[in-house]
Image (cartoon, rainbow, N blue to C red; front, side, top):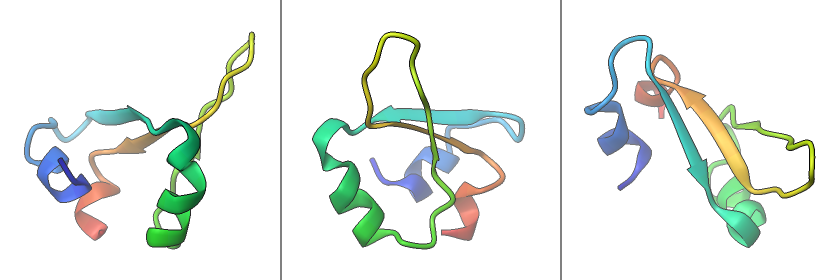
Length: 59
């Protein structure tokens, strides 16, 4: 599912949270203007982002 498809399933106040793991660099390269909010975890880990429903239709 891409971000445009995901937007169809979210309420206007919804959020998309996705884990991309080691694909983070590739994703950022493919979508350089996407306003990813990369989440930090207390005990480590990376590659999880959040986008709001409002941000998704822009891309």
